[in-house]
Amino acid sequence: MIEPMGSVANTPVMSRRMFAWITLVLFLACCVAARLFISRTLDGTLCVGWNRDAAAWRWGAVHSAMCAGAALALSGLLLQSMLRNPLASPFVLGLSAGSQAAVAIAYIIAFQAGAALAPSAQVPIGTLGAVVALLLCIAFGRSRERGLDPIGMVLAGVVVAAMAGSIAALCEWLLPPTERMGLAAWSLGRIPEAPESLPLIACLVLLAVSLLFFQVQARTLDAMQLSDDEALSVGVNLRRMRWAIVIASSALAAAATALCGPLAFVGLVAPHAARALFAGSHRSTLFASAIAGAALLVLADATRTMIPVQGGRLPIGVVCALAGGPAFLVLLRRGAAGAWSR
Amino acid sequence: MSMRARSISARLGEFHLGPIDFEAPTASVTALIGTNGCGKTTLLRALCGVQPLLQGEAMVDEINLATLTDSQRAARLAFVAQRPSVPAALTVRETVALGRLRLPHNPQAIDEAMRITGVLQLQHQLFECLSEGQRHRAAVARALAQRSAALAMLAVDEPTASLDPAWSAALAKLMRSLASQKLTVIVATHDFAFAAACCDRAALMQRGRVVASGAFDEVMRTQPLSELFATPFTMVSGLCERPIAMPCW
Image 1 (cartoon, helix red, strand yellow):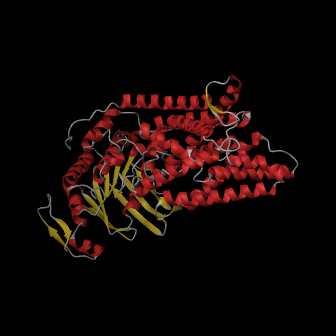
Image 2: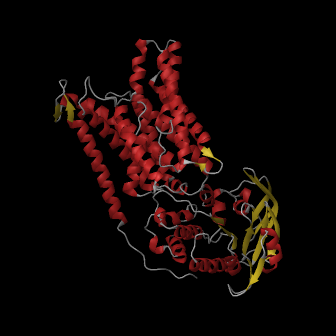
Image 3: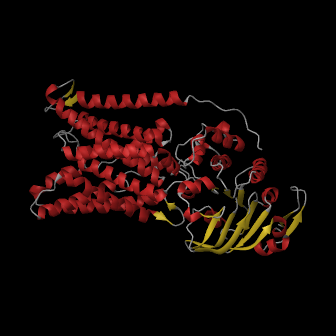
């Protein structure tokens, strides 16, 4: 029998975890407070304070941002876990664009038929588009030698997102100018202050069901971080889990996109923030990612209020892209430095 | 608790394995020896039930692997890959505990597996921060954590590729110790000294087939090894308890 080496190093894991939860919840509270208390008047002056008349609108925006942010973050975490790829997110892999394209196509078809696309139809149609986009990424991003290659997946995602974005743009162009505004504004991203109840409820329900399901499967998600052979040998049903993740991550991305339009950044950064706070086990990072995503999107919404621009506020999609671009590059740099050697 | 394969064949890309008949008796350590790309890893994967078979059947304790559920397979077979994967931001303990994913929670089994492989003092470190050798020991610990009354076989791919001599010798002792506890152990290796130190059986592989198998000393002779590797071999004494065939440079 081999002799043990040295003694056990005890680290205060519990207290560190408690500190991380407190930090995360406080961060969310600060972001919500910033969105509720900071505003800009019509003449461009920045105001800090409670406005009873605007409170309902601001709460509406906070609810929308929290739901969409949490859904995107959870979708991103599941994709990163399934693909063992730190660069995966619903935006990078084209799920958001796929969802956007599917909804835009449905919008055109409904318009040609002389009807309007019901908000309740956006989530299932968007989910279909997101699933197709993700399956295309997986099909073209894997190689026989290296399996699901992180960079190959991202490259496939770039192409899928570009194609889906073009389809969405074509659909916009096919509409009469008077009809384009709604679709165009949604494409740039929005945080609705009076959100449609159906996408909001769909987002909430999907979030709750996904969180509960994957929390129960947290250790299986951990085991999926092993290679396929190792994961199978410890008893993971990879096929079943992967389909569950494909459907859940696509539905979450589609629900968030239906609510707020295609948004970058949150689904990529929030899972990394959660892992930085709680290390890697999904027992903590599932809920932590959802909270971090909610906080980040509320913060992005509050931030655009503070940026003075002509004609109102910056589109949320622009704020997210401006924040997400550098975050993506930093992660790419870490990968180039060998930080995700697998 | 034996492992038996009857006329198994499998395909991995352009590579075709088999048909192969193979047997590893209970309480034995079998070395799979062969040139690069001859199918050692694919055979190990097939024997662990993680490589789909084109035909034939692999059986553990006379139970066809294809009839086992994921949980039943995990309870009977453990596998250590040549290059253990690096789970994102999981600690060593969390990674080793994955061995009991489908088994009843047993912290003592996890502690014991880490103690045996010398990673107990690293248990709170992130797996990705370990050296290659430490990662491999932690991966062996994960497989050991799968031990239960039902565990029949441990398959290890290139176990000494990144281990220092002291840990290679310790691992050889561990393999013998596991075999003495009625486990069937199969190792794919190029390390002849390690194989001689722990194996009592060997199978030589060439181009997807098993070309010779049986008792270690009968199979690991200079002539078949020289033919297999197209390199002269000679018997060397003093490296371990018995003379072993080693390549001449």
